[in-house]
Length: 119
Image (tube, rainbow, N blue to C red):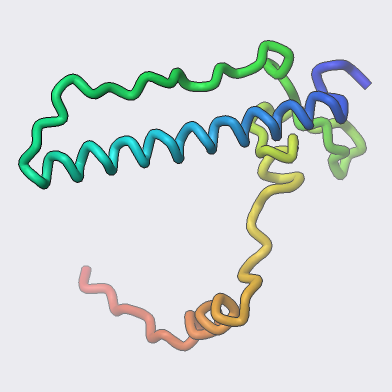
């Protein structure tokens, strides 16, 4: 298998990078909420700036392909991957609601009347 389809180590590195990115996003959102709280309280945040740089994308992962086996028997060449290292066609797409509340909400969707078109 070619190297750009990813080894388990590269897929682990991809998950690790995604986790670092998610942590950065959470920290940034907390910072933004604090600045917003200062502004709503009438206090000028002054020169507060978010100092942590975004996590850089590892060079080893650039050009990483999905690599899943397709129906034709060839390897998938999609480059937009989820954290599991697969594309939207081979893992990562929604499988529907999991909780009782979600299943109940989903079941109600079929009972809503269709909106009439006015055009």
